[in-house]
Image: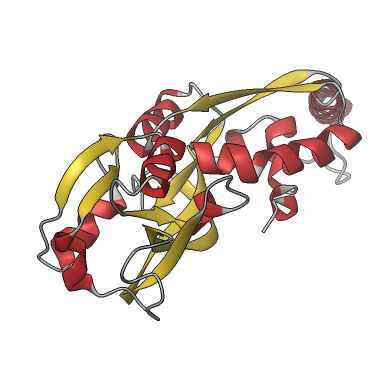
Length: 239
């Protein structure tokens, strides 16, 4: 910036700089007001699968709404592929997914969830310490699967095992009811098996298997202030 012969800036330049600072501060204030208003009302949209919706979200939302009672929620239930699409399209603010997922999405790892073999109580291997991989193809199998990116089929591929699939669905409770009635066995995530109304036996595979559950979003910085605040409540999910 040019100075006059006394080393002082022209009053016009000082005024322009002052006006610019005032405008910037005004913009910041308007943004803060809008964000505060956003915490008074609004909707957080979440893509999720059934076990998270059943076992995690009720407690998280309950505690969140004690602090922000006027924030509403919209839950979209789907499989991993559908949820990933909803995030990418902006249909939801974020979604619970099995990681890894699309590389362009930002993710937060939450938990490693065991995949367990589920048997009727009178099954011949009900008292084994770990369920043999070789036995998977010797029992009628109830497959919990829908769409791509399903971890159960990956287990079969890794161990070059071809199960005798008698039933395929995305309804975990239908699977458990059929197992209880002796129609076959299955592999289900441990999260699904919490507080179930069925008489079943769950066993770890002889080669333990897991799925990594996380929260995915397009960009955390672009989330609304309500959605950003919700991230701090993920620790309140029930174990």
